[in-house]
Length: 129
Image 1 (tube, rainbow, N blue to C red):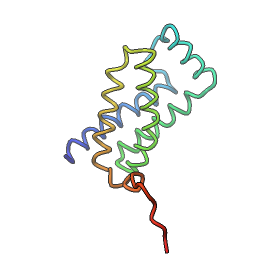
Image 2 (cartoon, rainbow, N blue to C red; image 1 turned 90 degrees about the horizontal axis):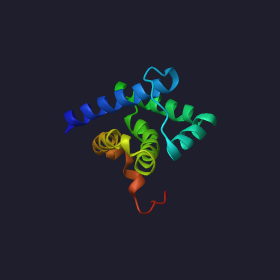
Image 3 (cartoon, helix red, strand yellow; image 1 turned 45 degrees about the vertical axis):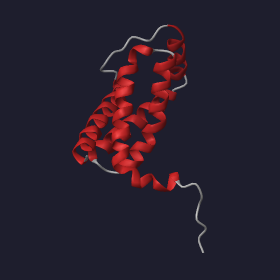
């Protein structure tokens, strides 16, 4: 399982590093989506909100590739991936396969480092004496 997790970590790291850098350097030109998806992306671009998203992707991608602070990288990427999935499910289904692939990679990595998140899944907090 460790080997599969390492492969998933490197793949996810490359994907988020490339797409995070692309947000700033635009070396993979992509036409703007049509319809409501285009309006939504236009609003994100005009508000500079996309800069935050690209920065999170870039930092998390570097952390995954460096194998440092992997739980932090996963915590940073979780809301980004939820938004990517929501965007593609609701507005631009053509990008859904890559979004699902990234979500699966995230889940594989999460399974390997889940002890780091154990405290989040406790129903009650133990009082300290």
